[in-house]
View (cartoon, protein in one colour):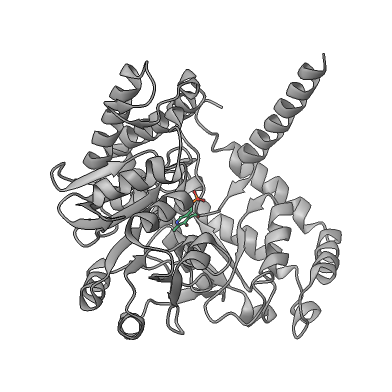
Length: 449
Ligand SMILES: Cc1ncc(COP(=O)(O)O)c(C=O)c1O
């Protein structure tokens, strides 16, 4: 039957992806491997149920168990981040990080009002006001960056804020390897009367394990994805203060109430109950002492990796890392624009990283000069310091196979990248590294896979 053929085909593709995940080194800092229980929750019958609204106030019948699940997940979320129910509320329905951020903007801003976030080139996220996104097209977005060494420069941020007077300041990043000083953002926000939103998507697991200072003392609203260091399913949460008010389309209410209205019915329909359940499972896991050990090892591993890159003569943006990720700037070796070629060659070697812009990037954003690496996924596999040193050695062997005089002074484009990749592949180095990667990953299998 046609249906079976198509379904078989899709499952075969899924099996290939599973094999890829098992046999390669996953170094994308925003990715992780969830537990069997998180997978079980995601693939469950909870996907069958409609429950528009909130616990006790649904538009559909039959939600008695769904209500209990959502209430329990909210309680777990507050517990993981040490929050009091009378001060903070949490909405666990956002489908993912980008919609969660837009929901906060919907709650706090009107179209045309000013939003200030970190620029994409400095390490911010698209949803923090980039011009091609809903956030940049709907609000007047002002971007702050980092200094020449790759560190947030709070004096500059303050100057910008005083000049532009945004109504909302967003703190948080996708490619920033240093601690973020939320108290300084609060002081700046207070000077201009702005709301402060912290997007802790990348570092949520580290905040939960108290390895990064908590944003909750300072922020009005905190958003997070649940699938990065927190090691849950794809999804997001919005925490908002109950003791601070906002006028939401003519009606005075708490920030939390406005956020709830912005999520549903503002921007979403029925919650994904299987996803909410899986977030709950991940939060329960994050409360265990084993999770704190895991989070500590993530940071140790990233620091060992950064040190090994530095020892081998690489430029690491900001000189190292305090968290789970690092940004390697390849400009000194190759000139601007060769992060993509390195990403491709590493992929052919079984090592997954992503090309990334570096601060003060001279190349086009399509051909950035850096690579971004992170340790959450390999740490979930149980890898430690020794393996991090080995991984950097493998990456270095691939990078060194690109001769600087092939690329220096040349502008990267698809044809040139393809040509260089082909030249390196011819040396068989990618095949050799692939075998070593498979040996390494087979020593660290994933859960019950
Ligand atoms: C800081 C930050 N916020 C939000 C997001 C968006 O999350 P999603 O991809 O789930 O929309 C990301 C994703 O990488 C992120 O890094």
